[in-house]
Length: 263
Image (cartoon, helix red, strand yellow):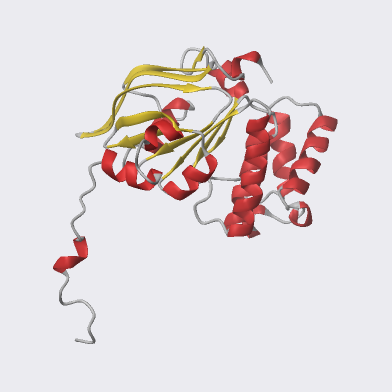
């Protein structure tokens, strides 16, 4: 693991980041520094701008304004260096479905420039740890949602990146697969690497992350160590609702016609 990803340095520096889609402002001038060697949660309601932000940070979407550095390298001025140091599991993951799981990892490893023998060794280990060894020769098109997430994670980890970006990695994943993914990610961060993942499930973030950034309406509302962002609130969920300005009014109170056996 490179020194750039060690604890105490910045894994990601974002300055003045903007993105508009027509009249809609998706990301509104974000400034954010994410520490290295941490398990970081980017949290917010649906439509907050999390996916757009991660897409810009990982070089998948060009910002309208602003700069992003990953382990000291500018994402848009030095994309080759950045992409060699990051792993990405995007939302709506697209895979080569007519390859088997093992073939997908072999292809990914060769694209990354890893020697064939090393690719085979790492692929075998990842398939085993992620409980995919029994399905390694099965076509990806026949994989379940949880299996797709796991093979996507294996592909993102294969080259041992310094920073791993995950967009809703647990969405649609069964509890067994979710636990397997958690164990792998916890082991990865324990080595000094950095995980940045987005989610709108506060309980999950609270159980996994030690550092969070709260996003709403394209802006960062709070960021820092989990305990600091949670403050005096009993849970991260409660702190989050206060930060994003959620109202306590019972939205269902207007639906007085619903239920009660009335047709």
